[in-house]
Image (cartoon, rainbow, N blue to C red):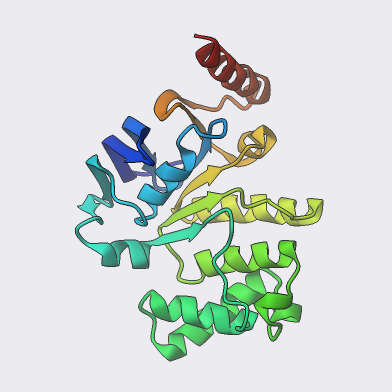
Length: 244
C-alpha cells in the first residue's frame, strides 16, 4: 500500500561532458513505494540519481521533495534523503561507529542523538562485531553494509540505493530485501537502481526504465508474471532502441 507523492520529477534535463545525459524526465514516487530504476550503462541512471539525491542540479525542470524544491533548500536534502552511491563515500581512518556518528551529526543531529542513532543502526544491520574497526580495513561487503548504515542512520524519508547488493552474500541480500520492504512499510519512499532484474522483481512495486537519457517505461510490477514481463520489456527497449 502506497501513500501520497513524496517525490515529483517534472521535465528534468541535464547535460554532462558535452552530451545530453537526461532529457525531459518525468515521474513520481509515493510514500511507501519501492521503485526500481533500470537501464543499460550510459542510460542516464547515475545522473538521475545524483540529481534526486541533491548532489547535482538539473539544467531545467523541477524536483520536489514533499512538495518543496530542495535545489533551493539544500537542508531538505541533507535531512530527508539517504543516499548510497555505487561506491560508498567512507573515511579510511574512522571506525564504523565514528562514521555513523559523523553522518548523523552532519544531518543535523545533536552529538547525543547521533550516538543513539549510530547504536540503533549498528544493531539493526548487525554491525556490532565491526563497531570499532577502521573503515580502511573492511572488506568490500563490509564497506557496503557500512555505506548502507550511513545512508539510513538519520531515518530519511527518501532512500536512494545504487547497486546496494554489490559484494553481499546471499544471506545479506535476503536481509537487504527485508530491510527495504520494512522501510517502505514504515512510509519511506525507496529508489533502487540495479543491473540485477531479480532484485527489482523481488522488492519493487514499480519499474522505471531509462534509455539514452529518456524515460522509456514506467509501470507497476505484476507479481504473477513480473519477472518474465520486466525482462522482456527491458531487453526489447535496450536492443530495439539500439538497433533503431
